[in-house]
Image 1: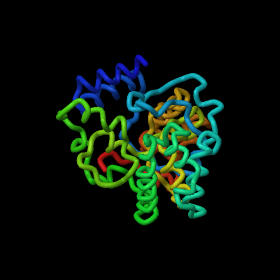
Image 2 (image 1 turned 120 degrees about the horizontal axis):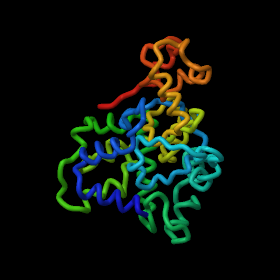
Image 3 (image 1 turned 90 degrees about the vertical axis):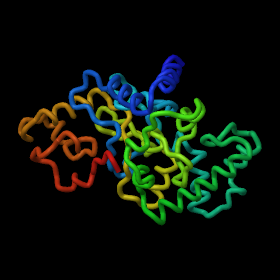
Image 4 (image 1 turned 60 degrees about the vertical axis):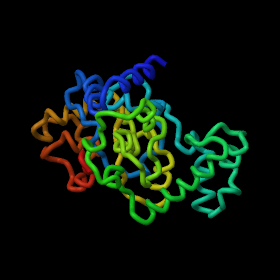
Length: 287
């Protein structure tokens, strides 16, 4: 709980931009080829098969972290960890079953399940309406980065002040899964793309965004934008190696095998050996 208390203090004392700069500075100290956490990687959603062990709650404090250890070992398969959610989504969007006839929202409404996402009790019916709207948005408009939907840059979203403490903490509590109209956009809305972690061998692990990820797979989306939160230290060493090399011949065999990885796009530069197809793994910061 100490880190959550620290997060609260940081948010209370700092402006959005100050908070972001401080968080990135703290997490990237000592990292050679550090990435800008705002940068998006474009990945094949079908390759995200397992869930990161990190709790997505207050994940913002981990932006840009590099961690050692075995946290990327024995991660649970998404279908196992979120079996009830996936069953509900399949019933709705594959079988066409009305929400009123699906077990999960009924369990939440009846109090037999505490919540679904942040919805509790009868609020779950508003939540599933938002899911329907999100599904239609991805189906009809394609899968777009949140910042592109919001049509603003980072500086516009990063506030310098708030009218009250509740306004300051609201985006942290609620997120912006539903790509609809908002009265006001904040820094956490702007960065609310699917977040992932990267294991020692480059495996992309889901950090949050299980509903959007399921939609992308179901709708056959080839590439989705993701924001990397935590990298394994062994993976970061490969990024460091690629960033320091002037030619592919200088790289180890392991580094060469990962040149086309979406998380190498910002460090490989014009180094030889990266395929033309790797250019599809775009990096965007402003939009």
